[in-house]
Length: 397
Image (cartoon, rainbow, N blue to C red; front, side, top):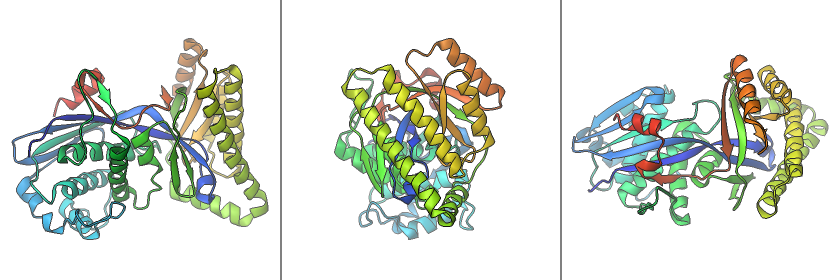
């Protein structure tokens, strides 16, 4: 099998509105972050398969002869794309030493890679290759880093297997796949997410695949055709939290006080729908300060609702207070209870205000980046379109 070198990237994600409400059949809006995961797939003649993830200190390799022993348990040709092959999962857990349930970040990332690799190549010749991944996204912060990883893996391995065609053509520096190929990438990325998370919603990998903004309601994911590119500050409070515990806490509040909490969820749903309309208007008419006024009000209202739902945290209150002193509006993104928050930046926001705000937040012990939301999903790149610092890291391997 001829293997061509391949560079791909996929974005992280933030929940703009609708945290926790989506669990109860309400609308959530998920948006892509312009912080990306980059993957380089390189053909080799070593007779080995190697994976390097320097973000989480994974540097592993296997002889093809080792992996070929697992092929009889790989049933890629007859397994539905939305299902995992439980026997292959069990064998892989034994293979990587995670059969006892020891599924830390390293084990999960390794399992996802091996599962996709063997599923896509197990019916034919196993190629010798090296996969190196570098991410601008912090892990475990609720920003979809695992989904971006799974999307990159799926795109690169599908391209290498010949299941989809590389879209990049001279003289372009970056290119997107067609809709049919994106759907296939998303399906395989969802499998990677199932390996890592067990029962994912599919939102994170869909954002990583299509980018932009997605509407999520009752399990149905609808990519929105046009969204404006918005500047934001992304802040990681570095306060650990458990999504499972936070979701259970919201459910408990609703069960105890249904007459109180149900209107809150209805209001969050209305916020999501109103925000969606405003963002849509911003792509079809001249953007005005009033558009940003409405978005800022919705951010403030939604953050208060999330505190009522019990998923706030003093660190997130600090984030909102610090940014408001600079005239900026913030809310949590994801499960809450710590984790990350987003701050909307107007086009006219002065760079000195941004720099001062970032420094204020870092003085609180937070990590903070200026980035944007609404950018493209998974892409194939030429080396010329990959940042020098990322390219330098990927080229080490």
